[in-house]
Length: 105
Image (tube, rainbow, N blue to C red):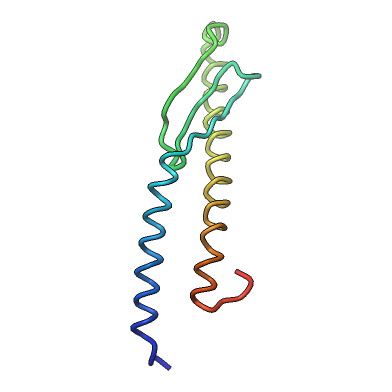
C-alpha cells in the first residue's frame, strides 16, 4: 500500500512549492472594488492586502455614508480576490491532479 511513499512525499513537496509560488504570484495581482458608483474605490492585491483607497470628495461630506461605502468597496474587492484565488487554484489543480492520478479534478 505504501510502496510509493517516497513518490507521494516528493509530490507533496512539489505541491507545497507550487502553493508558495501561487501565493507570491497572487501578491502581484491587483483587484479593485468599488461602491457608490465609483465614489469609493479600494484596491487590494491577490492576498487581500490593501494597496490604495480613492474617495471622491463628495463622499466625504457625509461620514456615515462614507463609512458604508468604504465597507462595501472592501467587500467588493475581497469577493473579487476570492474569485481570483479560486480561478488560480483551479488552474493549478489540474496539473496536480494529473500528477496524483486523480481524474477530473
